[in-house]
Length: 120
Figure 1: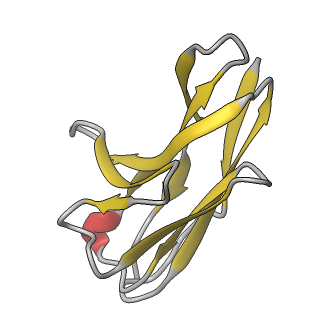
Figure 2: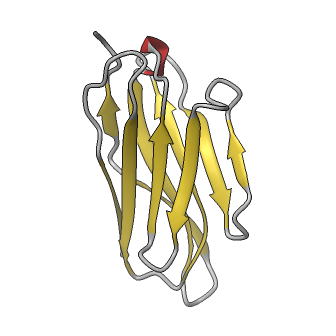
């Protein structure tokens, strides 16, 4: 059993900054990769940023230059630093872990989501 939980969400003003964190716990043999997604009401869930097991990062065009993803594999955590936030960044942000079991099976696990309203 694997559980994933986000933390650090909350109200932030336009132009402000916010740091989200996420931790995985349970039966984990190896983490292949991590990612952050977000979803706006009435819209499809979209990728914000990802980081591979080799440390290669990928960002959505809409957040490039304003967002940084980082990880601590030993602590099984991934963070998302967001700067110069815009009202259109308002969304529920979801943490994602790609995890191998000891049997060699790769599964994807999601956190319940963290609300980030960007408003003055």
